[in-house]
Amino acid sequence: MPFEESKDISGAKELLLEKTLEFYKMNGRKPLALVRSFGCQQNVSDGEKLKALLDKIGFGFTEEPEEALLIIYNTCAVRENAEDRVFGNIGQLKKLKEKRPELIIGICGCMAQQEHIAQKVKESYRYVDLVFGTFAYNDLYQMLWKVMGQHERVFNQTDKYSDINEELTQLRDDKVKAFVPIMYGCNNFCTYCIVPYVRGRERSRKPENVIAEVKKLVSEGYKEIMLLGQNVNSYSYGFTSLLREINRIEGDFRVRFMSSHPKDAGRDLIDTILECDKVCKHLHLPVQAGSDEILKAMNRRYTVEKYMEIIDYARAKAPDFSFTTDIIVGFPGETYEQFCRTKELIKRVKYDNIYSFVYSRRSGTPAAKLPDDISDKQKGLWLRELILEQREVTSEWLGRFVGRELRVLVSGDGRKGEGWLTGKSGEDIIVEFKGGRELIGQFVNVRIVKAMNWALEGTVL
Ligand code: 5AD
Ligand code: SF4
Image (cartoon, rainbow, N blue to C red; front, side, top):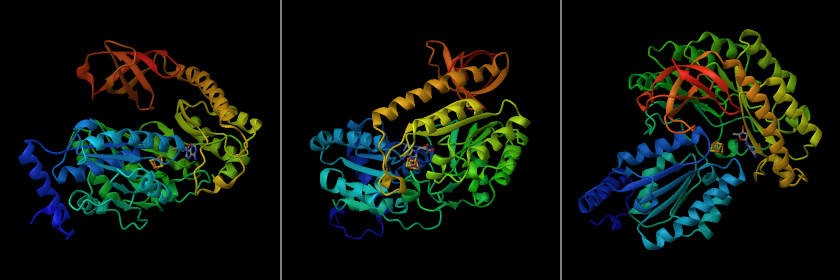
């Protein structure tokens, strides 16, 4: 029976496999999929799961839209410009679809979880075949079969999630650094943030599953394990004991994690980081703002002084301890005076890096209802001011490493030109140095000779 006539979708995986096999017989190669992930590491990790699912039904992969049979954008919803970029990218695919009607176009991830986005795509981007949110992965084969075999458009914004599916594995592009999600979702409801609405409530993976995955990755030669969660230190089986257990795994590798919420980051977290040799001496601790009034309006549930307690505790034990942060500029109602307190905080903490953003209104969040009378232009100027302040603070603070030796995981060609390599130290600082490309993927010891405002420069020992 031709696949097109089949209405039975229960055996979707087998039907899709037959279809890709048929493609193989006709073309002498696998059909190709382009999966592009935007946004945070969690999203990139989801994209890797998507690739594993596609690999199992006979797809190969490409980065070229022209040769893809299936294009899926795995999207981010955290700021408006992320969404605009996706719509721009999809717009560009229209011509391709006209030329090759068999091309399948899909959008998934955080942005695609939102009903109003699904509606917009349904009405205004009629050449998009598939729109599914963050909870629909278990249904991928059924959805894909509906599109490929039955030529229907599919919209799946289900908000029902079952237990974590440990059968969903990742197909990782990177052979050196691996993302390992330990928990999903978020319970914090910061008033500006869309994440709790698109990724649901917190749920944690069992420690034994995480440990088994890390062990496997280390045995395959991975050198850096990045544990992921919207708020890793509310991991429900105990985050610090998980870190300590991972630290006991044998092998030459290091461990990082993202992100930590300051309200849950206690002294035990700092102690654990300092006591575990494989855990990087670095904490990404998003502060978001430097005034108590704005922190309250953001529902962050800590004050500047509370935040500083954890910084001071770490620095009392390890004066060089590396912190990075996220900052939002121009939250509704923020005054210039309050913004200046964020600049003050940067000077007080001395961050090694800051990810700063202009506030973006996200419909459905509590802050979206607040009056916001500062223009985007003004907020852009504040952002510039903040970045200039940060560069000054960071370049001076990075100077503490000059003359010292850092262990660097080499990741690729350097930005400084021919013959230069780049990598990151355990403190998550970019280090540039001269060396042969055979070092890529290895740990090297580098003597630091210079601090710039974005990186360190050194020589391999
Ligand atoms: N506008 C601007 N930045 C935001 N972030 C989250 N939501 C918004 C928003 N509505 C930033 C926060 C967060 C990072 C991942 O993105 O700083 O820590
Ligand atoms: Fe973007 Fe947040 Fe979704 Fe990550 S979880 S992709 S940052 S919206």
